[in-house]
Amino acid sequence: MVSIGYFLSCEEHGPRELVRQARLAEQAGFERLWISDHFHPWNDEQGQSPFVWSVIGALSEATRLPITTAVTCPTVRTHPAVIAQAAATAAVQCEGRFTLGVGSGEALNEHILGDPWPAADVRLRMLEEAVEVIRALHTGKQIDHEGEFYTVQNARIYTLPEDPVPIYFSAFGPKAARLAGRIADGFMSTKPDAETIEVFREHGGAGKPTQGGFKVCWAETEEKAVQTVHRLWPNESLPGELAQVLPAPRHFEQAASLVTPEMSRQAVPCGPDAEEHLSTLRSYVDAGFDEVYVQQIGPGQEEFFRNWAEHVLPAARGTATTLA
Image 1 (cartoon, helix red, strand yellow):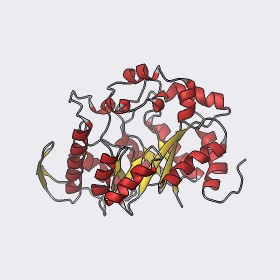
Image 2: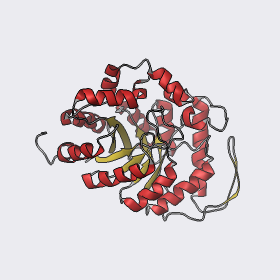
Image 3: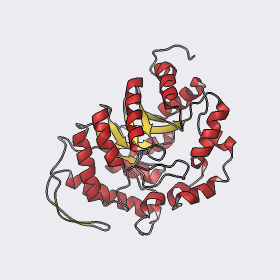
């Protein structure tokens, strides 16, 4: 049976609110957590971007749910040796219930120190080397590394969990999926794409866990939900590689000016129809994901958790025969 988790949005909520939502998620019957790792929100309307590692420390005391970063980019803004230390500490705080989800990142978050934003193929090579550095440091040995992109000298991590931190890869295309299958411990995506999962499994990922995530907006009416999605997350409708290459929230706002409310409606399940929410969840299960995470857009967190606990989660788990 698929495991269903909640997706904490650091772009939209501050640190204390994220901890509150994690408690609500656990009480509602969600089994695990995703949490985004951003320096900027996608647009100013979202309005938040707390430091994820501080939030994870608080979550480790507030909930017993497993936590995965969705996702951390360990290549440009933050050196992989620093991410290795952060992930090891998070795993100790969470008593082993922590997974480091990594990806090749977005210029939105990674260009802030003035570094050039590499092409996609270069970013994947950087990510592969970054994971090599992280895994070496997680052995607890003193590490010296002189690679194509990173240098590490006389580095040793002393605070380590009992078992190595699992590292999952976010992948949206076949090249990234092949790399994930070869060197990652699991696969992550925000699209119900069975073909990419199959590529991952064919290239070394068979038997490894897969995580997928999506957004919804539960509200009293469909119209109200569409307005909320269009105001806060119009970027969900932006095509192609824009999410990876636009450098600042204002550029996403400029691009999103072309997004209509109807486009937002098509991108995200909107309103109080539990069957629509369940149908989207099932599309991820049918694609082959072992774990599926959902994020509530906007306000109404309590109403979202109550309705999912009463209607969607029981139906997804086969403990309810009808949806109210």
